[in-house]
Length: 452
Image (cartoon, rainbow, N blue to C red; front, side, top):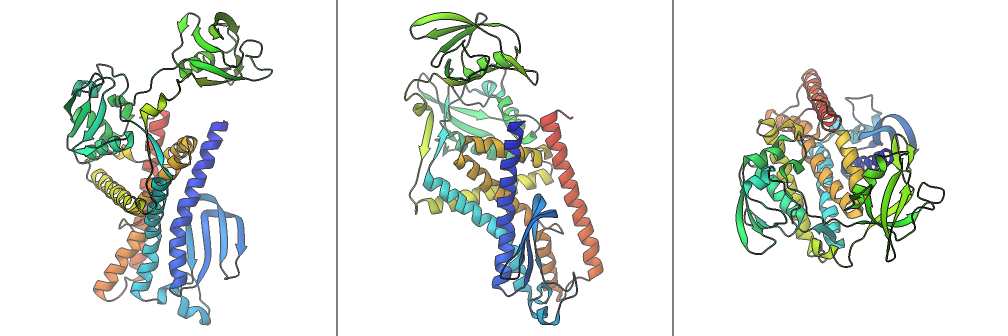
């Protein structure tokens, strides 16, 4: 339950930041170009908090944080006082209206650039693109990859980190082209491996986990070591800090996850645990408490990792403040292109719609990224901000791109479409958006709850 609350908290933080950035773009440009703003709202529905600013704008937080809006003086929406008519949105020139509408997505892209600049400047850790243990039936093994191979290049591009490698393979999948890998074997020597449709189709399909391909990172097993024993818990008087767990009921324990699984799966059941205390092996009995149907031991566990070992499996990248600017611009450009390409492929049926991520997906990845650290969470915000910017520029009525499409029609024909035509087209646009939302929810529920 606590984990769910954490995920929801970070998802709301992500939504609020991204919506605030987008709406601030509309707000700031409208004010700069002389349009009167009445309300700046984060969220829809009932007001949770509101304040009237000295500038006359009502600032609002509403109950549903899945969007927002900037309400400007506009004769098409309500009667406007005589003195406010020169500041009404609908009375502005076509370039001014276009600039205000375009500013929302533009600020999403600018935020992504700023976020990537901060990540490159601050520095980030990533895994070395070394593969874990591969089962012979996995698609990547069938393609020619082997356990503990390190992927050096994908399609001629150097891939010093797991993320770089993954994104390069993903781009090949979206492009419907084989991924040509240069890999280094653990025993030495390099070779070429071609990942074809058997691997890349899993990327494109989106219905399962990419780990089904066998493309999983290497992480050695380390036996669990007790870090702390909670007073009054099931482990009090059983374990002591610094005990090394060796086996449970005769089964050797290789890592912390395995030990946690044993505890969770045996609520109220005695477990014979072999430990190393100091230089003496001994056996103790643990009876996990039962909570919500799972076992709980009342201990803090850490992996017994040799000093400096992890450094060999990860990369730390940090760049100078100025050096990070072109890198951030390039990263934003690449991610924007990849997003556009992915949307086009889904529209044309070349990429499964199951790659869509709805609110449930965003809640989960927000919580997971926040647990992984500030830099990872900031990277997620940058990616979501780009997606929000791209989607809002699609020529769908009710989106910013739809408004820009109407402005283009107005520029070509010399006059705006009639109110009746606009109303009907907006209804169609709303139906499209609702359809996409329901599709995203369906994909979310099928992904996480096993709905076919």
